[in-house]
Each structure stands twice: as structure tokens, then as C-alpha cells.
Amino acid sequence: MSDPTAAPRQRGWLLAQQGRAELAEREYRLALAADPHDADTHALLALVLAEQEPRRAEALAEARAAVGLAPDDPFPHYAEAHVHIEAERWDDAQRAAEQAIRIDPDDAEHHVVLAAAHLGRRRWHEALDAADQALAVDPTHAGAANLRATALVHLGRKDEAGAALQGALARDPENSHTHANQGWALLHRGDRVGALAHFRESLRLDPQSEWAREGLAEAMKARNPLYAGMLRYFLWMNRLPARTRWMVILGGWFGYRIARTASQTNPGLAPWLAPLMIAYVAFVLLSWTAPQIFNAVLLASADGRYVLSPEQRRSGGWMAAGVAAAAALTAAALATGAGWMETGALMFAALLIPLAATFQGPRGRPTRVMTGVTIGLYALAALTVVLAAQGMRAANDISLIVLLGVVVTSWGVNLRGG
Image (cartoon, rainbow, N blue to C red; front, side):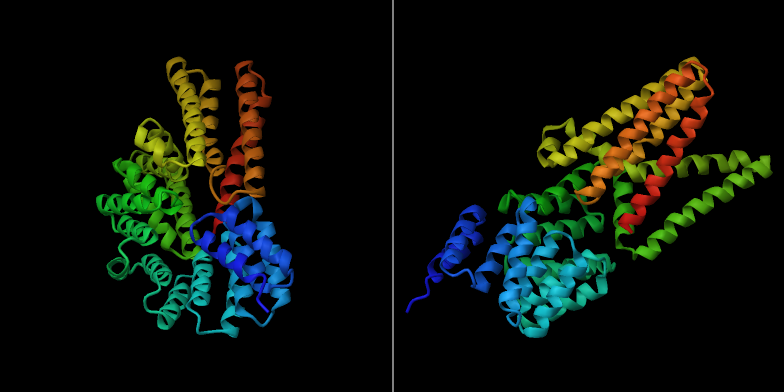
């Protein structure tokens, strides 16, 4: 007797390979109508749904249904790991991937999803080990080669990463993801021109590649020497373990405090230390706002508008408005010498930090909370300016609340990211 699920499941698989998710889902649901207890079909449906961000809860339900129907089959565990990776739930992804490996350690895909989970948790050595395990099973696996190269880049072994990606491109020169990864590897090495070429080739092969589009935007922003320097700092910090990144952040803050105290207790040092302190404050502000500020710069060009995502275009537009408000208050303060305008300029400049943070990190509840906090801080800042213009003492208290809010949100976002 023939399997009534075989034909629609096969059609669904072919459609999924072509990126036609809605049609693939329809075929998988036809297969499930014929046999609701087919674990593989539930797992395949989970993989299709996971590609659609609003439907990842459905994807997880399908993956767990598959695991419940066939707990000793590795494929449902692999599908569950993939769903968790798409949702950036790295711990759950690692757990599911390790279960798939326990059942079948000879499938390269199982080691690949484990490597991806480790990369998400910034565990570069573990990611490299998992990618090596995948390549030991299948030396030609393009996904494993790409993940291995990504881990090598973050471990500072950029030449090895470049060589690995060159080898992968020699085997498969039409692989969009490999071209994008080579672009990122070259960007880490400071080769912006080479990176641009690989990002553009990646987008030619796959115009929907977000990884390549994001890299192209970064490479284009790096045409500006100021942003190029900030990008080198961002990429360097991204390669560091979380504990080391915090040491760098805290070291800079304590260094600033020491310099400030020294300039106050020894006025003779002030002319030498003041430029360093100003440079540090400017660097901190840029480290938060540079990506969004240069998104705004890219919005002014046709190429820039093409490479920026809708989210980046929004961030660029809002940052342009925030910078314009801070600049207008600064210009007015310099022209008039009014103290209330100086207070307003300081607050609106500081508020660029939470404004930038609103567009950082994964979407969802944290972003909604950050948006609400930022709106509240801007409202308080505007109230402070109005009260200060009328000479009301309450303005001082509210301005302190605003600046404290900036500090708390910046540390909170760092903790969330670290």
C-alpha cells in the first residue's frame, strides 16, 4: 500500500528548496491531513514556518509535536534546534542539537546546527570544534565551512578564515552565503574594497540575503574614515569574550574618572587631560550612535537607500532628527549663552544614546520597553527645557533624572548584550 503522505511531502520539500515557503506549507499540511502522526512532516513544516518571523511560535509547536511523535528519531530534534536558532534561543538550540547528535553523530547537519548555536552564544572555540566535527563527517559541507570560517575570524585567525573560504568558493563559486562570509572576513581584515566585491556578488546570487546586505551597508559606511575607525573598534570588541569586553568598558570609565579627579586636584594637569577627556566622551557617544548616524548619511544616496533595511532606514531617520535637535540647541546656546539652552543641548546630545539603543538588539519586548523609555526621557527633556526657560528650579531635578535615565539604559543595554 502506497504512503499517502509521500507525494505531497516530496512536493513540499522541493518547493521549500526553491524558497516558496507558502506553497511548501500547503503541501506539508496536505500530507498531515492524510497522516497527522507523521513526525517527519511535522518537522519539515517546522523548518518552513521558522523562516517566517511572525510564525516561529507555530514552528516550535510543530517541532515539538515531531519530537513527541518520534523522540528517538534525530530529524525532529534537528528541526527543533533550527527553529530555536532562527528565534535566537541559543541554549535551547544547543540542547536540541546535542540530542540529535547523541542519536546520530554521523550526520553533518547535526554538528552544523550545534556550531550555529555556539556562535550565537559567542563561544568561538566550541563553534570551531562543532564545525570541524561536521567537516570530519562531510569535508565538502559548505555550511560547515562557512561556520568554521566565522569562528576563525572571531578567534583572530583571519588568514586561516580567508583561506578556508577561498577553498569553499573554489568548490562552489556560486554560493551566496560563502561570498557574504568572505566579505565579512575581509572587512575584519580592513579590506573594504575586497569586501564590497564579495558582498555585491553575494547579493547578485541571492538578492534576499540579509547577511550580505548588512555587510554591504557596513562596507559602504566605512568609506568615511571616521566610521572606518569605529567599525574596526566594533569588530574588535565583537571578537572579545563578554568578560573581556566588560573589562574594556570599565577600564575606559575608570580611566576617565581618574583623569577627571587628577585635573580637579592638580589644575596644572587640566590643559593636558581635558582634550583626552573630551575625546573619550566623544568616543563613547560615537560608539553608541555611529551606526545609526551613518545610516542617516547613507539615506542621502540612492545606493545607500538600496542597501539599508527598513529598520536601518527608520533608525537613520530618527537619528537624523535627534542630531538636528541637539545641534540646534547647541547652536542656540553658543549664540545666546543662555544657561537653559546649554542644559537642553547637553540632554538632547545624551539622549542620542538611548535613541540609538532603541534600534539595537533583537526585536520584541526589550525593544518595545526601550522605545517607551526613550520616548519618556525625551518628554522629560523637553519639559526640562520649558521649565528652565522660565527659571523654575524643578528643571534641575528633572534634568538629573534624564541624565540618570541615560546612564541606566546604557548600562542595561550593555548587560543585555554582554
